[in-house]
Image 1 (cartoon, protein in one colour):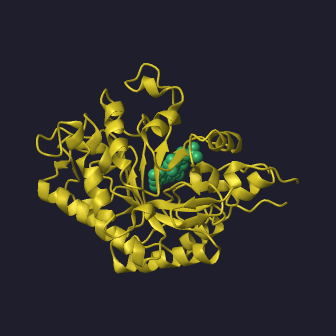
Image 2: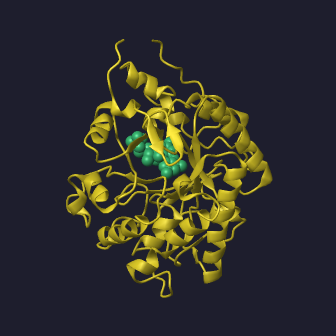
Image 3: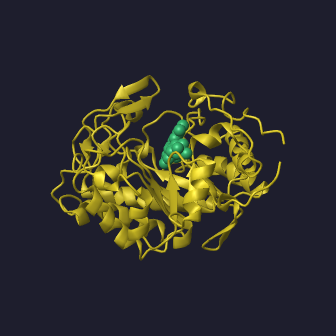
Amino acid sequence: MEKTVQPLLEEFQLGDLRLKNRMVMASLTRARANNAGLVPTPLMARYYAQRAQAGLLLSEGTWVSAKAIGFINVPGIYTQEQIEGWKLVTKAVHDKGGLIFLQLGHIGAASHPDFFDGELPAGPSAINPKTHSYTPQGFKETVTPRAFTIADIKQTVLEFKQAAQNAKEAGFDGVEVHAQAGMLIPQFLSLATNHRTDAYGGSIENRARIVFEILDAVMEVWNSTRVAIKFTPVAYSHVGIVTPDEETIPMFQYILKKLNDYNLAYLHIVGPAESLTGTPVEALQHNYFSHFRNHYTGRLMANLGFTQESGNAILKEGTADLVSFGSAFVANPDLPMRFKYHLPLSEMDRDTLYSGDENGYTDYPEAKI
Ligand SMILES: Cc1cc2nc3c(=O)[nH]c(=O)nc-3n(C[C@H](O)[C@H](O)[C@H](O)COP(=O)(O)O)c2cc1C
């Protein structure tokens, strides 16, 4: 079929990295590290390599430490065994001409004592985030966590730094800090889950402090243009009480203003999954990504619900520099090629998203041209 010019398929300069297109595979937790050490497996290497047509791949959210865990069979990057496992993944992707960043994750209070031999998980304050944790015994309600001490916060920042160092050793091309709704960082940003009265609570500046401490620590290991961060400013589903509040908009204005000095690889912003009418972030309802574009001078990656058409459109109008696709990459390992030749897309099977083997993981075929 005939080729058409599509911005999604254009090359892109990301710092010192040359991306072969502007399509990014967003992080997808697939729970295939089904071994006691949460070590990436050869099957995972195959899965990522199958998707190496993307200009950039983002790994699934990966635990920075054993204390960061809160979902079954998700890999870590805090043991030598895990680093060795990830080397299989990065090599397989590089052998196919792809680039891959590791997503550095910590779930904070949204975990469960089942992961810690009955000990409580920890978060900014002793407040139950009222969400669910996928434990080895299935989905369980979260509990009231222990509040981080200042020493815990300092330790957590060091864990992000060490994990970033480990990602380098494992052969990744960069790292993305996972600050999506539901994770530790948004729990600090949120008025609902952060009631601290020290330097990490109260004002916008204090609640956002951990974002910059983590980025500063990670940038001691990586050049800034190999470091990114992903936020979901407007999430409502599956995030319990960490939903937008009346300080969300000024909070992000503050964060973006500071990030303008960071020269990051990119800022990854997830859009709204539902109408924002009647919410504290209603002002973002229209021209959502333009709000972030107007406050952020660096490279912007847009996410959520993009199609071939809307992805090309947002790049063409210049509101974003890169577009990430999540679910479309599950069932379409060759998504860029399908866009290039306008081939139909396969549907993903929800039942095998988090199941333990190759079914619904590495058995989605490439399209026939
Ligand atoms: C099965 C599944 C697992 C996901 N795991 C992660 C994750 O580990 N880290 C993350 O930042 N986002 C995760 N997401 C969100 C996606 O990265 C993306 O933001 C979301 O799917 C919206 O993009 P889409 O509309 O193109 O699918 C996940 C989404 C799905 C469907």
